[in-house]
Amino acid sequence: MQLHNRGVELVVELLDAADHVEVVDHAELRKLLREAAQVMGDLLARDHPDEVATAAPPE
Image 1 (cartoon, one colour):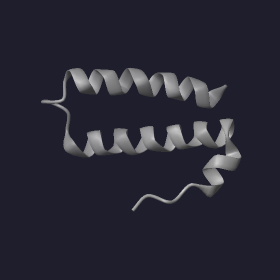
Image 2: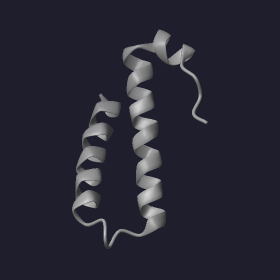
Image 3: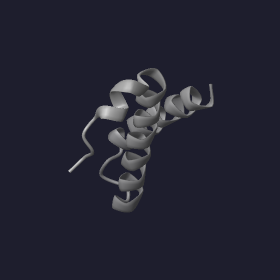
């Protein structure tokens, strides 16, 4: 349930950043996007671990 809750919080943060992209610090935006990728990866691993294990790593 913690992962789901963090995903929900992250969606709100991403939407807020998208609405105020002109004032969001580049480092903060980078951090937010990396965290989003991590949470999405964790959700995929939880829901379909066999597919994530065989996926190609990002280039």
